[in-house]
Length: 259
Length: 307
Image (cartoon, rainbow over all chains, first blue to last red; front, side, top):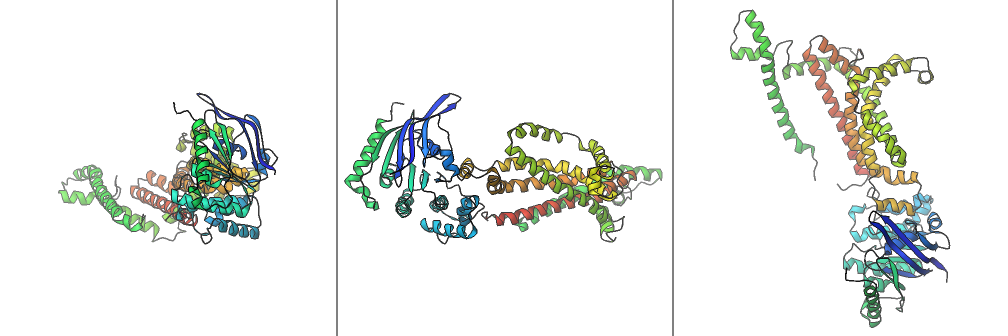
């Protein structure tokens, strides 16, 4: 297996008015091709920062990181990842089809190629038939699905997702989680997924990275023994609960509640 | 939300009616001393009713009554051919053409400056204070200087004049347009700088993940996001342009245009003519702002806004 992301003793310190904040400290991590890796931890643990470092949206202050064997900035210029943000960030003046077309326009895909890719990505997120709708005409869950379609449109092998379902209610979230698993199985992509929900992390991942704050660091990496095929009911099995328990223990160990 | 035209008819008409009543009252109040003075010299003491009627029909009043202005406005617009130099339509067109030219130049300059400011930190720090300072200059004082300067520049022996080959009329139009531009670019710069910076951080980050060029980010994100700001600025700008064109005509010895009409009226004590020119100017301003509003509505619809 080849590493899609490889971080070695990675550190990132933000200088602020009240002194330096260590967002990431000595992070060592490999993400292999085809993995579904979740990052879980309380706020301030650096999970989003780590994702942003992979995406070249933040610059590390120490250590090394490679994405597809190159530096993050080269990987970004090569358009080798799709990023899904916490909010859909759809452009309100573009309909769904045009929103999905946005990266394709920037990357200068031909008109016919664009049409085909829009159709395929909207189909992957079950939004066929909503091409001409404007974002405000869609529910929050559908908007986030459209933003996933936009990230899929240019077919990068790596998908970075930063709490994409964090703002949605539990029922919609369950539904989107199982859809995401199907999508992952169909597209064979590598997915890095930030969340603060234990069931979500355990349900989705092949590898769970538990992080803790002050300084932001990795406290545990759990390889999930769950099968690839996961119905929603798997969440009531003993295996599932055992992993969830280990994640919870990891979170507790890394977090001092005295503060 | 219905931004219906019909909903506003009653309040607007009520306001107009109230203003007309106040106006008639003011005509009595301001004109009666002059009338009383004249009548007392002729040895006549009028009754109240006679005095009121005289204050409303005096031919050189300090404050003309609404109907006098309305009649003059009607006579000087609808009864004369628009090409007649006594027609207000003729003068209005002279002013309007300078207004529109200046408005277009001001909007283009304003948008260009805003784009430059947003993309260049040095420009952001150095240009803005000058732009604000430019608006503190009393335009009435510098207008003649600027108009004469541009007129000579555009008709003289230099490369610009030779390239443009304007006749005297064209040069006058452009030099008045420069004053309109001077007043109208300011709201556009201020609005567009805010508008171009209005996209959320997350949207800017998104463009960065696509490694979009700054031109692509401008074209696909910043400019569309700035459109609502542009229209708000353009409404202020178009009204300022009209003021600029009138001001440019006032102290420069222009023979035609609403500004010239105002000045000639005040030289000859023709208060009624002054007022009808003023009313026409405000009607013009209203129409211009309404046109910008209509274009705004159409663009909002195209851009898929929630109705």
